[in-house]
Structures are given as C-alpha cells and as structure tokens.
Amino acid sequence: MKAVIIEDETAAAVNLQSILHRVAPAVEITAVLEGVEESVEWFGTHPQPDLVLMDIHLADGEAFRIFERVSLTAPVIFTTAYDRYALEAFKVDSIDYLLKPIKEEEVRRALEKLRRLSGLERSRYSERVERLAERANERQQVFLVRVRDKFIPLQRERIAYCYTSDERVTACTLDGEKYPLDKPLETLQTLLPASDFFRANRQFIVARQAVAEIAVWFGSRLALRLSVETPERIVISKARVPEFKRWLTSVHPAD
Image 1: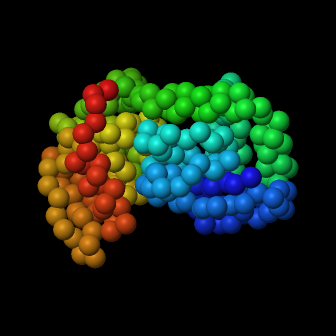
Image 2: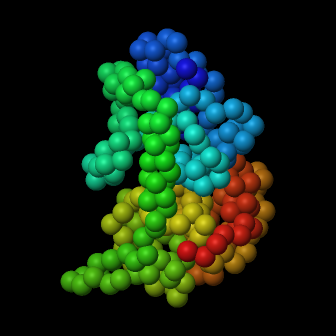
C-alpha cells in the first residue's frame, strides 16, 4: 500500500510516519506534502496513491481546497484538531479521522477499516469525501456580532479585513466600522470563501475587494494597503507571495 501524508507541521508529520512504520510496515510513504499548492502540483504529476492522510488546516489554506483543483480517488483519512461538532460530520459520512494528538491504536483502527473496504465501498468512500468537501465550502453569509446588549448581523461582503491582537479578533467593514468577533482567525478562515478572502499572515485576513495597493517590500515581500485604515502594516511573506498573486488575479464564479 502506497500512502501520501499532507501535513504542514514537521513534528506531526514525523510522528505520523513513525506510527505508520510501527503499525503497518508494509505501507510505503511515497510523499510528505506541506500545503495546498504543493499537493495540487504533486497529484497533477503523480499516480494516485492507495491512501491519503490529510491534515485539514494547512499553512496556505484548508485542505478541502485541494479537492476543488484535483480529483482524488484514493481513500482519505483526515487528521484534525476539530471540535466535536465538526467531528460529527465525519461520523455521519463514515469518513475516518485521527484526532490530534494522534495515537497508535487509532491509526491501526483506521487502516483496518480501509482494508475491509470492497472496491464499491471505496468508490462510495471517495464520493463521501467529495460531499464533505462541498459542505466545507458552504461559507457563512452573516456573522452575529455582539455590541453591548444587542446583536448586529454583519454581512460577509461588508468585511474589509479581520485582525487579531492580544487574543482579540476584530472585523473592519469597507465603511471603516469595527466589530468584535468571537472566533479566532483559524476558524474564520474556514467560514469565509477562499475566493474572496486571503490569510495574509498571522494577524490578518483580507478581502479581495479591499486591496487598494500592493508595494514591493524588503526581502521580496509584499506590503498591502487596503481601502480602509489598518492598525498595522499588512506584510505578506516571500513564501506566500506566489499564492497571493494567484489568488488576487484568479477569476472565480460568483457564490
């Protein structure tokens, strides 16, 4: 059995490889990929493996974006730190998952389940993965933000950027209004459509329509100026520049 691991945390990838070697020595790990872009490129130039072990949150976006760009026929086992509500979605669709920190017995159980799958069941398994990916891409249209003793609906198309500082998250609208949010940027990244919002760095998620100017910055980085004021300069690292350029210039169908 040939397997591919998609995991952006080096320690987690090494741990998973070590567990696989112990519980299933016959499994050959053909590639360890770190992000969406690298995975899309790899699957476009290599034959499908027998198994994919995939972390949901990757450095350059959520793993479900891979399904939007390549067709995966191999069974997928997700590795995740999702909360119990998200895990229920996996259970309903009979999708296997490994909850971090990953335990040896859970890997053994997941592999045994895959060995019992018939050809038809494997086909249905892939279909369930695709449905789960589709559900993950159903983005949140409205956020309820609390302002003193009331809740205000904030439409996502009004958002210019989301910003985190001192464990507080704020959404700023295209009109310059600011609202507190009760979700971390990692969660917001899964709720906002990747076609319209980009995780610029650890502090910012920016809206495509709010990007007003892009300046070349030190060390081959980019500095963004938005149509509204930001609490600090938004800098995109050299490693993220290619992905940002593709995102900003790509054409996406309307939601």
